[in-house]
Image (cartoon, rainbow, N blue to C red; front, side, top):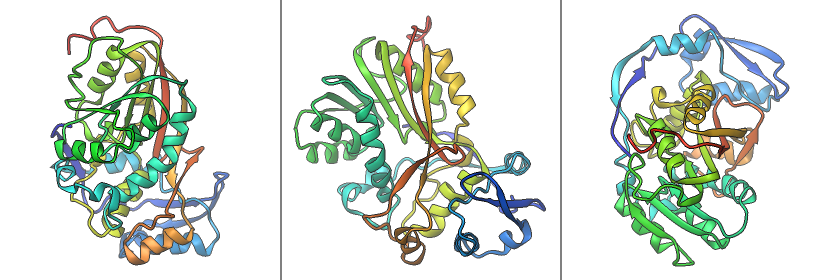
Length: 324
């Protein structure tokens, strides 16, 4: 991972617009004056309105609001990737840090990834962190390599590798230390939004993938909904959330990711929305205690407004993929 220059939204991003609450069907049930939302001390008041009306999903995204949010980006911020070096075994143990949300995400995502992969594959996990996905795939019988820039995270990954078979290497996603067409599968989950140049990762993934190989990814959409849930929600409700763990301008719209993939020889086969389960006991426990319980969970969604994951197949080689 690398440091990058980004822009951060000002505190008055709601302006004078309306914010809508919708149910899962997408039908608008009521609207909240932005002034009311702006005066709320935290996101709990918004979710209280949602739960009192039996809404199952909060949609804070609007084609009118999102451009306004981006226009108001003024103060520059640097994304904080350094805190990963300080986690050590808290990767697997902490319940009042956003890393617990990563564990909950992986609990759903790992089975989905595994179900899409043929037996005995050679897999590369880019930005593997402490090995949540890499170690799981190794237990499924695959040959797995994980790369990350955090050596302390790699040490934890090796410690929790029950198979003792995963090869963990300190390396940059921009310059993978592998020959072309080495791998059958490349994964990049929870890493694209931490990079200033995510297309460089995608280009390198294409280079090291064999023809017909598959690229799995997960990232966040750049919408008002993702800003409220992924950035402000974590800041408000997770006790030890690092400052600038995520920054809005690095989030990636699905159309942007599709263009990056297509220009690097990939055909996206599937996109799935990905969000936390709300209106559950574990969700409200988080709001009250600022801790993530072991039963906190995520689910797939038809909406791509917050997070999304997908898989792409390498259908051709990029002529210049070795020149970046």
